[in-house]
Length: 537
Image (cartoon, rainbow, N blue to C red):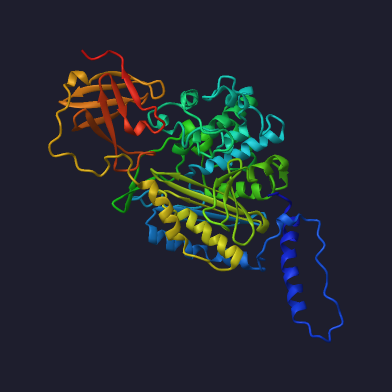
């Protein structure tokens, strides 16, 4: 994919209906016609900018005109408390509107300036911060990470030496899926999580796609170090400030201080309620941006314009183009003829059914944020949708419906059931014993003095098992997160979890074995066994 000026993009798109018209006229000619059919259209534009389905004049305006109805229908059918939507086209914000309320039980409504947490849309925003630094020569996309963060390492020395910023922004570093997220839940800060990543087992380097928030965060930290500042300040100085994004920040404290902001909502028994606060500062480059629909419209316009905004070159085009190019297969086709999905540097990149390249990203906080944007550069149009509820595909449904209307003039399929099903698995409880009934005649538990004590784990850190009011309690992490242990059978106990990475109903086993304790929930990468510091008597 290449980003070109708006004029050249329109020229290439206009070439398609010209060719189709010529073909139709030639097919309708009679045998008596003596004039020959015109030849192919001559154009300097890349054939890669052509699309298979032309967009008639007025079709994008018609699509924008349907957004009110589509958004209201989704609000009613999903029950999501609040939503904000913005559309940019032709260098202008052509639609910006809020729906619903900022917080259930309160009257304050959402408008186009209401601030939402973006979750993983932050990755795309952050990629443009990196592109800015690439454009001015601070780093290159292929700069080795350890050249800017000498203390950073992964589990393989060769990978550590060769790992680049681009490897981290494409999720091809070899780190396992969502590496480090569990540490964040326990209260470990950014530096502590990045330090511990070296203990994780690695998948094959540069040929494995595994989505990692802290991988992206490590790449961003390398860029900030090269720039001589922190990531949050760098983002403000390079993107938010120059674009006039006055309601945007990469700091959680700034989000909390906004008067016009939403709060997150979770689903419980099919209904939304206010959820726990999500502070994503530890992984801010990957999930910690907060912004409004109006601010993101400015950012979308800059991306669609190849780094320009209101006549100023905010990001160099040749530094931005690689970010929105396919770099790795993120979703392999399941059958012959199906289109695969790709990932660039912080952007999903794909080809639509109309033959147009799209760049997009979703954001999802289980505790109350669902966001999505889609750009169609060849049509010079982009849309962003922000919601303040547990992600169920509402944002993706609206952007898909709008993209259909832009490209085809109609909605081609029922998108809501498709996305709802895709997101449903995120709410599935984890754990072998989740939803199961305890045994009626369990084997007795070992004596308490054989279970309590200080346990340690190189990756997860200390775990303290104590007895309080006749019950065993497990305490972990800098945040002193506490879990109540309930006897299940023999040396097996259980404890419930809930939060950003543990859907409601999640149950973990805690299995004692002599001086070791294995915690099922924390054992995804076979790192969940803790050793007691003082052996039992």
